[in-house]
Length: 106
Image 1 (cartoon, rainbow, N blue to C red):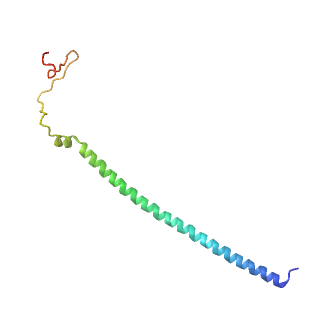
Image 2: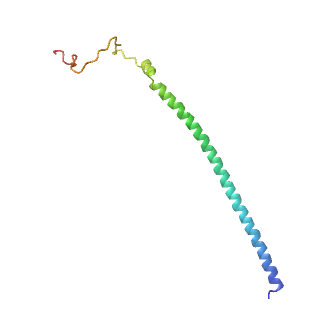
Image 3: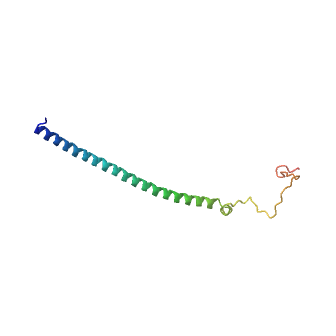
């Protein structure tokens, strides 16, 4: 059937093919592990960035709340035309308000 030379050649070819296949499989494995590790580092870096941005957002929200507070507005408003009031009177349902500054004859 098979001669001795042919059997040795096919056995040799099978061994070489197996070694090449295992080497290729090893390279694919190393490539996949490297890709996964790289993604892990990227994810860790992005998580650190998220924490930093959340802290910055919190600080900016606190700063915005401080700037919008009534006390801050009262401290920053210094208009000479404005006079503080001592007594406030509200109009009822039947009361009418006139603009005496623009219509002094009424």
